Length: 162
Image (cartoon, rainbow, N blue to C red; front, side, top):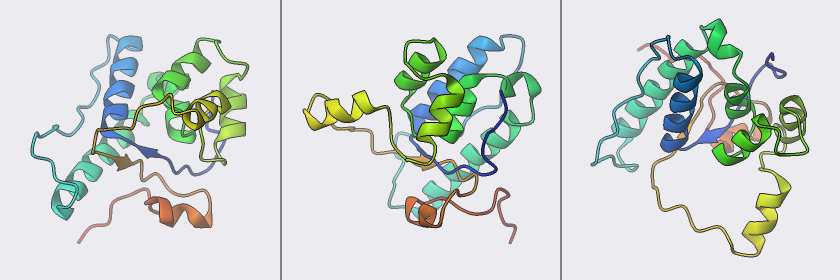
């Protein structure tokens, strides 16, 4: 599997990064994966220092992951970085439980900034609970359209030095 887009902009919650790391570690048992930034009980979304520190830690995690050829072969990583699919939808897609192949899902859902249609229908019916986890993060891996700025993504893939 290769990346089908030059750049990607997705918003991910911290717990989704935790999920990704667990799945990558499970599939690459002999590799030592980089650590995620620590999850502090007093994380404050209103504190720019906390937010920037976590964003930088998540960015470093992704940059290290993307340097490993074995990890790059994991379809979950591609779906995680190129679509807004939830971890549950990613697992379903990778295990063949959806009508979409991994490449189809990336092609169809990467530019739509949405999840599988069934999930959208369930939300309309009110079956999905509100997300109570207040922590969120953007992948910061670039942008795919002009509206990406409103989604919190940065055009640069390398943190600026000051």
